[in-house]
Image 1 (tube, rainbow, N blue to C red):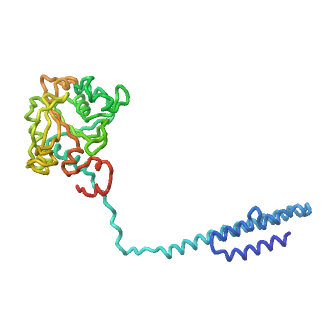
Image 2 (image 1 turned 180 degrees about the vertical axis):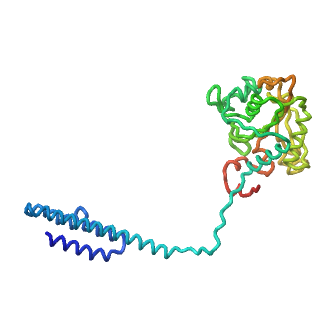
Image 3 (image 1 turned 90 degrees about the horizontal axis):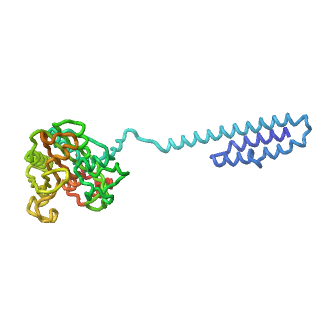
Length: 341
């Protein structure tokens, strides 16, 4: 048996020298060290040996097995190193060649509009405020003079979590929070996402971005509101753009108005884009209702104020002549690449 073990080891070493890849190495390992391998077959004859020879042969068999396993591992590393050297020889890089220019991202058109609006109102002394997207029914409706039976409070229009919490339907709760924590004078804007249970089509989305502004001080009049918005329109859309105020009704302002601006396409002549009117609706506004001021702890006999609100997506669609609001939410790079800061 001793001679057989030595012969097995010598034969194994000769075969190992001719192994060319990992697959052949694995086949050789199974042939000699597998469950039905050569070494296992020899060891099955241990029982026929005299008792005093078994320990000696067992130790020798273990030495041979360890030697074979060590040789296999060494060969495996040798094959791995050789493969790496061959790969390095094939895959070389000329570091003197110019590199590939990285692809630069482009600002989203909504981001461009948002930054521009913030810049416009910063230039007029407005401060940017922020608030949570999940707010209370009190801040979203009660504080804004919306009666319990107002259609906007229905489950078909608003996303409720429970009786007291909801996804805000406008950014007006930020105005409420600002008036509750800060004494007049107040001059602020807020921009953020809002949510309404609406369809998703070319002109509507259940999620949208809104910009609202608020001014509260002594002696604030409708003339201040009109002058502020006219300046905003001309800074945002160009000095030739005219604005028209139409009477309207909102629960939280009195009097209230909607503002139309000169159509971009026809410059006021009338076209398909503006339905032949020569003007396009851009925002809603009005003087802050005295009940809203009182709810927020502001003396309506001493202070007055105005507020306005507009959809960022709507302004973006108008500014860049985009005909489908869904383009703004699909994140298609073919679309966003068209816009520059």
